[in-house]
Amino acid sequence: MALIEAVNLGIDFTVGPPWARRRLRALQEVSMTIEPGEIIGVVGESGSGKSTFGNLCIGRTRPTMGQLLYRGRPLIDVPRRERAGRFAAVLQHPKWSLNPMLKVQTSVAEPLRIAGSAGTAAELRQKVGAMLELVGLPGSFQDRHPHELSGGQRQRVSIARALITQPEFVLFDEAVSALDVSVQAQILNLIKDLQAKVGFSAIFISHDLAATRYVASRIAVLYAGRMVEDARSEVFYGLAAHPYARGLQFASGLIDDESMELRLGQIDLDAKGCPLAERCPIALPQCRNKVPLMQDTDRHRVSCHAAETKSA
Ligand SMILES: Nc1ncnc2c1ncn2[C@@H]1O[C@H](COP(=O)(O)OP(=O)(O)OP(=O)(O)O)[C@@H](O)[C@H]1O
Ligand SMILES: [Mg+2]
Image (cartoon, rainbow, N blue to C red; front, side):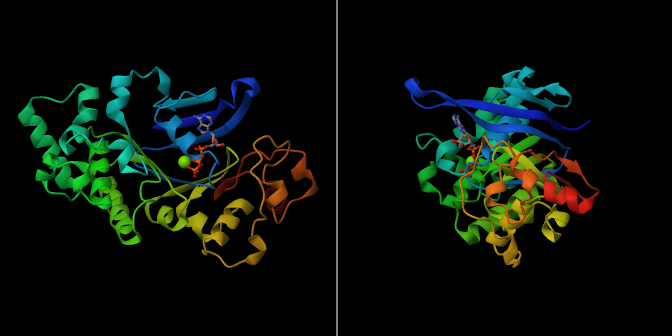
């Protein structure tokens, strides 16, 4: 059984001032499974729904459409205490997850307390020390405050905090984006090493297709709240199937096929047809009228009328 399964998952937010409330469909009809031990890279432009999807996957938000299943049961039915031990997140700015007033030990140990498994003070000190060593920091750093650490060290502390309960699933949301390039590489290596050692599944969200390639075994591409492609990493980076995915690859210099350059345009969350149609270099007439369905080919899952035509 899959560790995580999204079934037609979606969420509407209510946005705008009280006198002009409107619905914003931030994610819709996303279906995918995540197996134990997989790291899924989630890519897409700003506003495409990456964080929304990640937050639904760890039960931080409740879907308004479809379901998010954890080992076959709706994640929202899993009690908070159990979820706290099994799900964790590492966010972009360690500032947000590490309280500057608290010692590293207190922050790293917090998930244990929520999960009800903190133990005695001596046990806690031993656990936190061992965890800090696992992420490449001296155990004595537990007595420091966040301002006494570098950005990279703070992100290592955030990772220690996320992994202290030995979670089954970890959300990394732009976890390396705020770091210097050389530090990014160290943290990416750390995430890979820890995954191999400890064996969690993860979603790794990033704008950076090269970073994603480095850690993820599978790539999911979001556009306008829809999943447009899902493929194993080597297939995706060999040749992505969806024109949006190729556009992203062109924009990040991974391919040099100029014909794949995306036109500028707003992300249209309420499009009647394919949300990419106005920007797509290979759009067909039907793309403006009908949302393409996710198709399984032997190498990709992809939702694109043009890709369908090619494989037909
Ligand atoms: N809590 C919320 N309330 C209202 N709207 C939201 C909320 N969270 C996200 N949104 C909206 O949902 C859409 C998707 O947002 P999301 O944060 O998931 O995008 P993203 O792909 O993570 O973008 P970024 O790369 O900028 O982090 C955006 O239009 C955003 O404004
Ligand atoms: Mg985000």
